[in-house]
Length: 294
Image: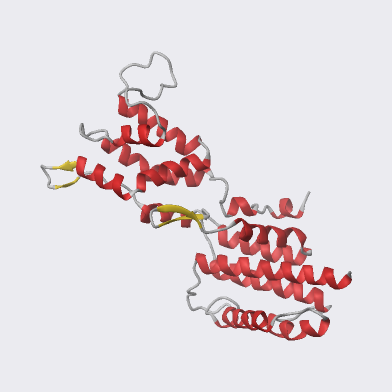
Protein backbone atom coordinates (compact mmCIF):
# COMPACT_ATOMS: atom_id res chain seq x y z
CA UNK A 1 0.00 0.00 0.00
CA UNK A 2 1.41 3.39 -1.00
CA UNK A 3 1.78 6.44 1.24
CA UNK A 4 -1.13 8.17 -0.50
CA UNK A 5 -3.36 5.14 -0.01
CA UNK A 6 -2.45 4.86 3.67
CA UNK A 7 -3.16 8.54 4.23
CA UNK A 8 -6.35 8.36 2.12
CA UNK A 9 -5.21 11.38 0.16
CA UNK A 10 -6.95 12.81 -2.88
CA UNK A 11 -4.86 12.95 -6.08
CA UNK A 12 -3.95 16.51 -7.04
CA UNK A 13 -5.95 16.48 -10.26
CA UNK A 14 -9.03 15.38 -8.36
CA UNK A 15 -8.56 17.86 -5.53
CA UNK A 16 -8.00 20.69 -8.01
CA UNK A 17 -10.34 19.70 -10.83
CA UNK A 18 -8.53 20.39 -14.08
CA UNK A 19 -9.50 17.65 -16.52
CA UNK A 20 -12.54 16.19 -14.77
CA UNK A 21 -15.58 17.14 -12.72
CA UNK A 22 -16.76 15.09 -9.78
CA UNK A 23 -20.42 14.32 -9.15
CA UNK A 24 -20.72 16.92 -6.36
CA UNK A 25 -19.64 19.66 -8.75
CA UNK A 26 -21.93 18.41 -11.50
CA UNK A 27 -24.85 18.29 -9.08
CA UNK A 28 -24.21 21.88 -8.02
CA UNK A 29 -24.05 23.06 -11.63
CA UNK A 30 -27.26 21.21 -12.48
CA UNK A 31 -29.01 22.74 -9.47
CA UNK A 32 -28.27 26.14 -11.01
CA UNK A 33 -29.38 25.17 -14.51
CA UNK A 34 -32.41 22.97 -13.80
CA UNK A 35 -34.79 25.71 -12.49
CA UNK A 36 -34.02 27.77 -15.59
CA UNK A 37 -34.89 24.93 -17.96
CA UNK A 38 -38.05 24.07 -16.02
CA UNK A 39 -39.29 27.65 -15.78
CA UNK A 40 -38.53 28.46 -19.42
CA UNK A 41 -40.73 25.54 -20.43
CA UNK A 42 -43.74 27.39 -18.95
CA UNK A 43 -43.39 30.27 -21.42
CA UNK A 44 -44.62 29.51 -24.93
CA UNK A 45 -42.46 32.25 -26.38
CA UNK A 46 -39.22 30.98 -24.90
CA UNK A 47 -36.67 29.62 -27.34
CA UNK A 48 -34.16 28.61 -24.65
CA UNK A 49 -34.33 24.85 -25.17
CA UNK A 50 -34.26 25.10 -28.94
CA UNK A 51 -31.45 27.67 -28.89
CA UNK A 52 -29.21 25.30 -26.94
CA UNK A 53 -30.22 22.35 -29.12
CA UNK A 54 -29.49 24.17 -32.40
CA UNK A 55 -26.66 26.58 -31.55
CA UNK A 56 -24.62 24.48 -29.11
CA UNK A 57 -25.31 20.92 -30.31
CA UNK A 58 -25.83 21.84 -33.99
CA UNK A 59 -28.99 19.79 -34.36
CA UNK A 60 -31.88 20.52 -36.73
CA UNK A 61 -34.62 22.81 -35.47
CA UNK A 62 -37.36 20.26 -36.23
CA UNK A 63 -35.84 17.44 -34.15
CA UNK A 64 -35.80 16.65 -30.44
CA UNK A 65 -33.62 14.36 -28.29
CA UNK A 66 -34.76 10.76 -28.35
CA UNK A 67 -36.33 9.46 -25.18
CA UNK A 68 -34.45 6.77 -23.30
CA UNK A 69 -37.53 4.56 -23.12
CA UNK A 70 -39.56 3.39 -26.11
CA UNK A 71 -43.27 4.14 -26.28
CA UNK A 72 -43.02 6.95 -23.73
CA UNK A 73 -46.05 9.10 -24.46
CA UNK A 74 -47.24 12.34 -22.98
CA UNK A 75 -43.75 13.84 -22.60
CA UNK A 76 -43.41 17.39 -23.83
CA UNK A 77 -40.63 18.52 -26.14
CA UNK A 78 -39.23 20.78 -23.43
CA UNK A 79 -39.09 17.88 -20.99
CA UNK A 80 -37.18 15.80 -23.54
CA UNK A 81 -34.74 18.67 -23.95
CA UNK A 82 -34.38 19.03 -20.17
CA UNK A 83 -33.63 15.32 -19.76
CA UNK A 84 -31.00 15.48 -22.51
CA UNK A 85 -29.30 18.52 -20.95
CA UNK A 86 -29.42 16.87 -17.53
CA UNK A 87 -27.59 13.84 -18.86
CA UNK A 88 -24.95 16.08 -20.47
CA UNK A 89 -24.30 17.87 -17.17
CA UNK A 90 -24.36 14.85 -14.87
CA UNK A 91 -22.97 12.09 -17.10
CA UNK A 92 -21.34 13.67 -20.16
CA UNK A 93 -17.72 14.66 -20.72
CA UNK A 94 -16.53 17.30 -18.28
CA UNK A 95 -15.70 19.61 -21.19
CA UNK A 96 -19.19 19.20 -22.67
CA UNK A 97 -20.66 20.10 -19.29
CA UNK A 98 -18.65 23.33 -19.25
CA UNK A 99 -19.64 24.04 -22.87
CA UNK A 100 -23.29 24.07 -21.78
CA UNK A 101 -22.53 26.21 -18.72
CA UNK A 102 -20.65 28.76 -20.84
CA UNK A 103 -23.41 28.94 -23.44
CA UNK A 104 -26.09 29.57 -20.82
CA UNK A 105 -24.02 32.28 -19.12
CA UNK A 106 -23.40 34.34 -22.28
CA UNK A 107 -24.82 37.83 -21.92
CA UNK A 108 -26.60 37.94 -25.28
CA UNK A 109 -28.36 34.64 -24.58
CA UNK A 110 -29.35 35.64 -21.04
CA UNK A 111 -30.83 38.92 -22.24
CA UNK A 112 -32.83 37.22 -25.00
CA UNK A 113 -34.28 34.63 -22.64
CA UNK A 114 -35.07 37.27 -20.03
CA UNK A 115 -36.96 39.34 -22.61
CA UNK A 116 -38.87 36.31 -23.86
CA UNK A 117 -39.98 35.37 -20.36
CA UNK A 118 -41.15 38.74 -19.10
CA UNK A 119 -44.22 38.36 -16.91
CA UNK A 120 -46.58 41.18 -17.87
CA UNK A 121 -48.89 40.43 -14.96
CA UNK A 122 -46.32 40.86 -12.23
CA UNK A 123 -44.27 43.38 -14.24
CA UNK A 124 -41.02 41.54 -13.64
CA UNK A 125 -38.78 38.94 -15.19
CA UNK A 126 -40.17 35.60 -14.10
CA UNK A 127 -37.08 33.61 -14.96
CA UNK A 128 -33.60 33.67 -13.46
CA UNK A 129 -30.72 32.86 -15.79
CA UNK A 130 -27.52 32.07 -13.84
CA UNK A 131 -24.50 33.98 -15.06
CA UNK A 132 -20.72 34.04 -14.54
CA UNK A 133 -21.04 35.23 -10.95
CA UNK A 134 -23.21 32.30 -9.89
CA UNK A 135 -21.17 29.70 -11.77
CA UNK A 136 -17.90 31.09 -10.41
CA UNK A 137 -19.18 30.51 -6.88
CA UNK A 138 -19.62 26.82 -7.70
CA UNK A 139 -16.19 26.65 -9.34
CA UNK A 140 -14.57 28.20 -6.28
CA UNK A 141 -16.42 26.06 -3.74
CA UNK A 142 -15.57 22.80 -5.48
CA UNK A 143 -11.98 23.69 -6.46
CA UNK A 144 -12.62 23.70 -10.20
CA UNK A 145 -9.53 25.01 -11.96
CA UNK A 146 -11.52 27.40 -14.14
CA UNK A 147 -13.33 30.74 -13.79
CA UNK A 148 -15.44 32.96 -15.99
CA UNK A 149 -13.27 35.83 -17.17
CA UNK A 150 -14.82 38.37 -19.54
CA UNK A 151 -17.65 35.97 -20.34
CA UNK A 152 -15.46 32.96 -21.10
CA UNK A 153 -14.46 29.98 -18.96
CA UNK A 154 -10.73 30.38 -18.49
CA UNK A 155 -8.18 28.10 -16.78
CA UNK A 156 -6.79 29.70 -13.63
CA UNK A 157 -4.90 26.61 -12.48
CA UNK A 158 -2.41 25.77 -15.20
CA UNK A 159 -0.98 22.35 -15.92
CA UNK A 160 2.38 23.66 -14.76
CA UNK A 161 1.01 24.56 -11.34
CA UNK A 162 -0.63 21.16 -10.94
CA UNK A 163 2.52 19.40 -12.15
CA UNK A 164 4.54 21.38 -9.60
CA UNK A 165 2.39 20.10 -6.73
CA UNK A 166 2.32 16.56 -8.11
CA UNK A 167 6.08 16.50 -8.63
CA UNK A 168 6.83 17.78 -5.14
CA UNK A 169 4.58 15.19 -3.51
CA UNK A 170 5.94 12.38 -5.67
CA UNK A 171 9.66 13.12 -5.51
CA UNK A 172 10.16 14.54 -2.01
CA UNK A 173 11.01 12.62 1.19
CA UNK A 174 8.19 11.26 3.34
CA UNK A 175 8.06 14.17 5.80
CA UNK A 176 7.78 16.69 2.97
CA UNK A 177 5.16 14.57 1.19
CA UNK A 178 3.10 14.44 4.33
CA UNK A 179 3.12 18.22 4.84
CA UNK A 180 2.26 18.96 1.21
CA UNK A 181 -0.47 16.33 1.19
CA UNK A 182 -1.99 17.78 4.35
CA UNK A 183 -1.87 21.26 2.80
CA UNK A 184 -3.69 19.94 -0.27
CA UNK A 185 -6.27 18.26 1.97
CA UNK A 186 -6.97 21.43 3.97
CA UNK A 187 -7.22 23.42 0.74
CA UNK A 188 -9.52 21.05 -1.14
CA UNK A 189 -11.88 19.94 1.62
CA UNK A 190 -15.45 20.27 0.36
CA UNK A 191 -16.96 20.47 3.85
CA UNK A 192 -14.41 22.19 6.11
CA UNK A 193 -11.57 23.81 4.19
CA UNK A 194 -8.90 25.40 6.40
CA UNK A 195 -6.86 27.78 4.30
CA UNK A 196 -4.68 28.99 7.17
CA UNK A 197 -3.60 25.42 7.95
CA UNK A 198 -3.00 24.81 4.25
CA UNK A 199 -0.50 27.69 4.26
CA UNK A 200 1.06 26.44 7.50
CA UNK A 201 1.58 22.94 6.10
CA UNK A 202 2.94 24.26 2.81
CA UNK A 203 5.58 26.31 4.64
CA UNK A 204 6.34 23.33 6.90
CA UNK A 205 7.03 21.25 3.79
CA UNK A 206 9.71 23.73 2.69
CA UNK A 207 11.19 23.73 6.20
CA UNK A 208 11.33 19.93 6.16
CA UNK A 209 13.10 19.92 2.81
CA UNK A 210 15.54 22.54 4.10
CA UNK A 211 16.29 20.33 7.12
CA UNK A 212 17.20 17.49 4.79
CA UNK A 213 19.44 19.69 2.65
CA UNK A 214 21.15 21.21 5.69
CA UNK A 215 21.34 17.97 7.67
CA UNK A 216 19.46 19.47 10.61
CA UNK A 217 16.67 18.05 12.73
CA UNK A 218 14.77 21.30 12.93
CA UNK A 219 15.07 24.71 11.32
CA UNK A 220 12.73 27.58 10.51
CA UNK A 221 12.44 28.72 6.93
CA UNK A 222 13.86 32.09 7.84
CA UNK A 223 17.04 30.57 9.30
CA UNK A 224 17.28 27.96 6.57
CA UNK A 225 17.29 30.51 3.78
CA UNK A 226 20.31 32.15 5.38
CA UNK A 227 22.19 28.84 5.61
CA UNK A 228 21.35 27.26 2.26
CA UNK A 229 23.91 29.21 0.27
CA UNK A 230 26.64 28.09 2.68
CA UNK A 231 25.77 24.52 1.68
CA UNK A 232 26.10 25.25 -2.03
CA UNK A 233 22.43 25.93 -2.81
CA UNK A 234 22.42 28.81 -5.26
CA UNK A 235 19.69 31.33 -4.53
CA UNK A 236 19.12 34.45 -6.54
CA UNK A 237 18.94 37.44 -4.17
CA UNK A 238 15.46 38.32 -5.40
CA UNK A 239 14.26 34.73 -4.87
CA UNK A 240 15.75 34.63 -1.39
CA UNK A 241 14.16 37.95 -0.50
CA UNK A 242 10.78 36.84 -1.85
CA UNK A 243 10.74 33.71 0.31
CA UNK A 244 11.89 35.65 3.35
CA UNK A 245 8.89 37.92 2.88
CA UNK A 246 6.58 34.97 2.36
CA UNK A 247 7.91 33.39 5.54
CA UNK A 248 7.39 36.67 7.37
CA UNK A 249 3.81 36.80 6.11
CA UNK A 250 3.11 33.21 7.20
CA UNK A 251 4.64 33.88 10.61
CA UNK A 252 2.84 37.14 11.28
CA UNK A 253 -0.57 36.62 9.71
CA UNK A 254 -3.16 35.91 12.39
CA UNK A 255 -3.87 32.25 12.90
CA UNK A 256 -1.38 30.72 10.46
CA UNK A 257 1.82 29.85 12.28
CA UNK A 258 1.08 30.58 15.91
CA UNK A 259 -2.48 29.41 16.33
CA UNK A 260 -3.79 32.75 17.50
CA UNK A 261 -7.48 33.21 18.15
CA UNK A 262 -7.81 36.06 15.64
CA UNK A 263 -9.64 35.16 12.44
CA UNK A 264 -7.32 34.83 9.48
CA UNK A 265 -7.84 36.65 6.21
CA UNK A 266 -6.38 33.77 4.21
CA UNK A 267 -8.75 32.77 1.43
CA UNK A 268 -8.72 29.95 -1.11
CA UNK A 269 -6.76 31.84 -3.77
CA UNK A 270 -4.02 32.83 -1.34
CA UNK A 271 -3.78 29.31 0.08
CA UNK A 272 -3.50 27.87 -3.43
CA UNK A 273 -0.80 30.38 -4.30
CA UNK A 274 1.20 29.40 -1.23
CA UNK A 275 0.83 25.68 -1.95
CA UNK A 276 1.96 26.09 -5.56
CA UNK A 277 4.84 28.40 -4.58
CA UNK A 278 6.10 26.17 -1.77
CA UNK A 279 5.81 23.09 -4.00
CA UNK A 280 7.88 24.84 -6.64
CA UNK A 281 10.53 25.72 -4.05
CA UNK A 282 10.64 22.13 -2.80
CA UNK A 283 11.17 20.98 -6.40
CA UNK A 284 13.93 23.57 -6.77
CA UNK A 285 15.71 22.35 -3.64
CA UNK A 286 15.45 18.71 -4.75
CA UNK A 287 16.79 19.50 -8.22
CA UNK A 288 19.60 21.65 -6.80
CA UNK A 289 20.61 18.88 -4.40
CA UNK A 290 20.67 16.30 -7.18
CA UNK A 291 22.82 18.58 -9.33
CA UNK A 292 25.29 19.13 -6.51
CA UNK A 293 25.64 15.38 -6.05
CA UNK A 294 26.43 14.93 -9.73
